[in-house]
Amino acid sequence: MTRFYFDVRRNGRLEEDKEGEELPSKEAAIEEAMAAARELVAEKVRTGDVVDGDAFEIRDEHGKVVHILPFRSVLRLD
Image 1 (cartoon, rainbow, N blue to C red):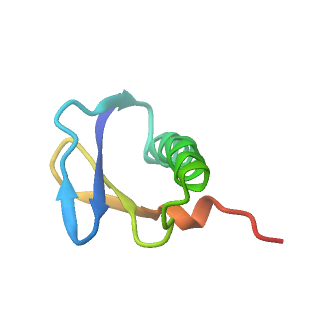
Image 2: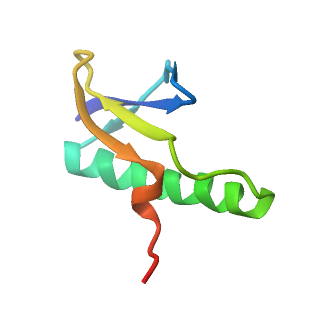
């Protein structure tokens, strides 16, 4: 298991995840980020906030960014 951190890039600022989560793989971390992004996007839609621009920057336990997931990428518009 590897610890992954889900930092949030919002309005040009990075909000660091201090705790992280133990997950079996990078793919599992991406799936976790997608589920969380869907919840955050749904809340933004409910409150009328802008969805574009926010993203998860997923770091591994060594501090390396292994994936960037823009929140808007979880929207299905077709």
